[in-house]
Every structure is written in structure tokens, then in C-alpha cells.
Length: 565
Image (cartoon, rainbow, N blue to C red; front, top):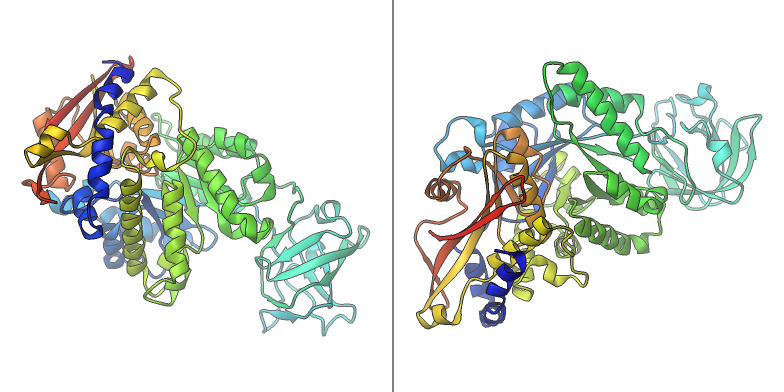
């Protein structure tokens, strides 16, 4: 059946479903759309740190909804990272509980190695006090002279003003007089007055009061910097990742497509060195967009990357704060159009580091990221070092649930129906994937409603034809690109293949044997919680669950079967 005819077959049911959903009360919508329980589509990336690395806490975080564990190598030691990896592998997840499986084989949570990146930082004060306070109008001198790296001079030690070391050797060639330099995430803004290349010094004036501690970040908004794609520390950290089978490398301060290629090639060379016996999947590269230069080169970075992270911390220092929302939305829109996962990160529930409840603005921030089309939302300090790591993940999941339910109420056809720019199919296979999404959204007909019974697709299952796992994974990604309202369960041959699919919104990898019968697949999904035993009832209608089974082959042939369960 062609994609066009397949879509036309179900198109007439669209208006009926929309009217039915709008007729429900707020209290009924959740039950109508999600049945007796709901699997969220938007994924949660949680940074694991001192507050959450112990096994009991991490097990709860996994069961609460974390799909990808982030290890931040700006802070983590190798000993801490080893502990977090061991404990994650011990976590069984709710799937294992559903199937009474005592082995952790069903845990397909991915692991993200977040590099520190080639950052530019200040030095250390080298005395008992680790910070210095500055006032408006005060003079400060920046230097690249190595002797001041660990003994910066305070204002009290130097009459002409404090002397602050900066790690960027080409600083004097980069910042002209009149330009702006930001220290400590913008806490201190400097205006460059003059440069002295012979002395390796830049004379500056402090424009706003602030405190400068040891080894704080330095930003030069609007200026192109000449930094390598990886620091020596990054290379050591990626080597650790290659030894420990991590799934994703979040590349900090990506500025151009060549940076992505260099990191991918380096990771591949490590795997060839460490695993000469056979091919090993290279970790997927997530480019972190954190600078003006990255925004200028965004289209080429997106094409080269496997995924994108909107890293709003440094990005909001590099660009005017009031433009951040627009930039975030544009990045997410472009990623959606390309079918590549996008993560929105930084301070999403920041106040939950100290408080058991987030602010209203934080709840809205997470919801808007979901509405925009983010594949993942990320927790940083909230889950790594805050007082309420488990509650933070639980809160984020609840916000995701309610946001996605509202999106379906507004646009029952697919989540993309809420955007103004439709995603056009680029191939016949993608056209079929788009038709699958359309079919999954149409759950009832007039005749069914007359008999007080509605049929509702609970999930889309992509199974393997002739052991062609690659075709199944690609079809799953294409289906998720068009944003169905229901989970997409992809059959994978092993845990590693599943972990590499975790970033995609709505895509849930499950290890299934090749050639499993439809009945066996349905039974297994029921044990995993994707389907519910017995029919549910809402708005005086009995809901019969259905599964849309999609069988994909490398030839491009696609078989689609609809089964009631």
C-alpha cells in the first residue's frame, strides 16, 4: 500500500477524533489519551553526582524516569565516574520489575560523557582567600604570563589594579580596545581599554560590581576564538569513555563542523586501539551550542552532528539574554526539521537544588521546551548535587506528562501539528513513516462511537524483517521525526543498540528476538507496561487498545499491521 493511499484511508477520521477530544472535560482528558497509565515521550537527561550516585538513589532516579545519565567531566573524577557507571548497570528499571527479571539486562539507559571542553578560564589567587571583590570603575589587568597562573595579584598587592591570569594564549590578538570581556558567567563585565603585547597584558575597566573566585570562565561575546576541538583533558576523558562503553559524547564549545569530525575521528581511533578484535559502535556526538560562532555555523554543525544540545549557560553569556528564548526555539525547530535529537539544558528546575518545589517560571520553562519540540530536557545541579534529586526527576516527568497531553488535545494528528512549519518527507520510506504516524492518531470512527466503543492505538511497534536491525532503527527514527502521540517501540538486537536510540523523543528500544510472532510481541509489551490488561472506559466509551506493527526491511519494503489487544 502506498503512503498516499494509506494516509487517505484514515484521513476522514481526523475531524471525528478532534471533536471527541475537545468534548472531554479536563479531568477526563488524561484518562482518554493515556489510558490507566502513561509513558512520556520527551526524555529526561539527569546529571548524576554526589547527591545521586549511590545505588539506592540512582535506582529510584532510573525508575522515576531518567533515560540518559550524564557524567559532567568538568567536575567528575574517574573514580566517581566508575562508581556511577557500576551503579547504573546494577539498576534494573521498571521493565525488569514488570517481567520479574532479576537480571539487569533490560536496563537500556544511555550514558552521556559531557566534556569540559577547551574552556578559557582565569587563574587562582594563591592565598587563603579564594576570591576577590570588584567595584564599578575599578581597574583590572588581564595577563597570559604563565607565572601568574596560580598567584594572581589582588588590588591590595598592585596599586594599578588586580592582575588576573587568563588561559587563552591568543588573548591579545583577539580582543581589540573597546571590546567586552565577561568573567564568571558574566558576573563581572570588563571594557578593554588598551593592550600591551610586549608585557602580555590587557588593561580593563570594571563595568559592574562582582566577586571573582578561582578558575572562573572567561567569555568574549561576538569574538571568534582559536581553540582546539578538544583539550588534553578532554582526550583523556574520552579515552575513559571508550574503555567504559559510553554512548554519547556531549562536545562542549563546539564552534564548527570540523570540531565534530575531529572528535568523532578521535573516538573511532581509540575504539580501534582498545578493541582491535572487531567493529565497535562509535559514540554519538552531541554538539553543545554555547557561542556566537556556533550560531553562525549552526547549519553545518547540525548536518555533521548526531544530536544538538542547547547549552543555555554559556550561550546566554555570549548573546544578549533577551534573545535566548528566540535562539532556543530556532535551534529546536531546525533540529526537528532535520530529524535529529535536540536537548534543552541548564537551570530548568534550578531552585530544586535547595527547595522541594520548583518556581512557577521553571515549570513553564520545561513545558515550553516540550511544546517547542525538544527530544530531551536536562537536569544539571538539581539531580547531581541538590537536596532533592529524585523529586527533581519526578517533577520534570509530571510537567512533561501534562504538557504532552495538552499538545495532543490541541492537535490530535501529531505533535508536529502544533508547529507552523510542517516537516516534508525526503524519501518514500519517510513518507511511509509519516503515514504510520497519521494512522496511529486516528483511534475512532463514527460507527465505533455508535456502538459505544473506541479503538485507540496504544503504541507503534517497529519489528525486524529478515534480521535487518538497521532498517528497523532507521524506520523508528523516521517515525519519531514526525512526532506521533504514542510511544514508538523499536526492536533491537542488543542493549548497546538500544542505548544509542534513547535520545529520540518517543522512541523506546526493547530487546526482541528476530522473527517474534505478533502475539509474542504484544504479550511482551503488555508485561513491560506499554499495554494494559483489559479495556478501559472513558466518557461512556469502552476503549479497545490497538498496536500498530511496522515491519521494515533494507529494501525499503514496509509491512503495516493493526492488531487489537
